[in-house]
Image (cartoon, rainbow, N blue to C red):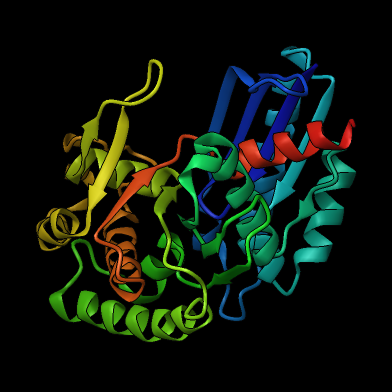
Amino acid sequence: MRLGVLDVGSNTVHLLVVDAHRGAPPVPQSSRKSVLRLMRYLGPGGEISAEGVTALVEAVRSAAAAADEAGVEELLPFATSALREAPNGPQVLDLVADQTGVRLRVLTGEEEARITFLAARRWFGWSAGQLLLLDIGGGSLEIAAGGTENPDVALSVPLGAGRSTVTFLPDDPPAPAQTAALRAHAAQVLGEAARRFADLPRPAHVVGSSKTIRSLARLAGGTADGVGPQDRILLRRSALEDWVPRLARIPADARPALPGITEDRTFQVVAGAIVLAETMRAFSVAELEVSPWALREGMILLSLDRLG
């Protein structure tokens, strides 16, 4: 079966087309991404501006056309924090559906965390034991932990890389006082979040997913021999902390010259690095491994599971 996953996030609109069968891993066939940065189209009350709605409709329409051209049999369209938190989100969703024929499913933060955790569990398997998942999106940070495919605790906090950039790092490059303010805010939010996990067993394996974490791991991390054709990508907190002040001194337009930093993440990678470092600190994580599978793959797995 050819499936398409349409992910309308706070930073990008991403269509992933895969050939998928129950009991087998999904095989990617094509990928199409539009950089939208919805967080930059939010008004003072969090509403999406008219300009942002127009850009969103065009991105979804273009992705839907690409899915048709790719022979997608079933499209799984969903949206995350920017749309679920916008006061005019329901009206925007109706408009998108009317103008594109695509009805986006808005995931809750907890659903994001649980579905991404499922993807990581399937990738690493039962041998990974007690798993702790960290996933940084544009609008929110998802954290989940547990020993099965269904995490014991799953939560979402408003510490996405895009949101944190817009709120705390308006200058390019950011001033030291701005990065310090973000670090202090993240530490407070994450200290409260970590208490939700205090009674769980210590994780045997810590996993990071999302493009922001993959980018930071390629910049500051290392590799180890993996199973099959892929190496394991590892990221140590000490290496990440070493890079944070250096990244913060480099203007956004110069960051893509660094390993792993792409054009679509260059504006928010400093905030992402600060948030990830503070998350690892709050959860006493010295090292994490990057998961190639995340939310989109989790949506595919859920769809296949429902086929019975």
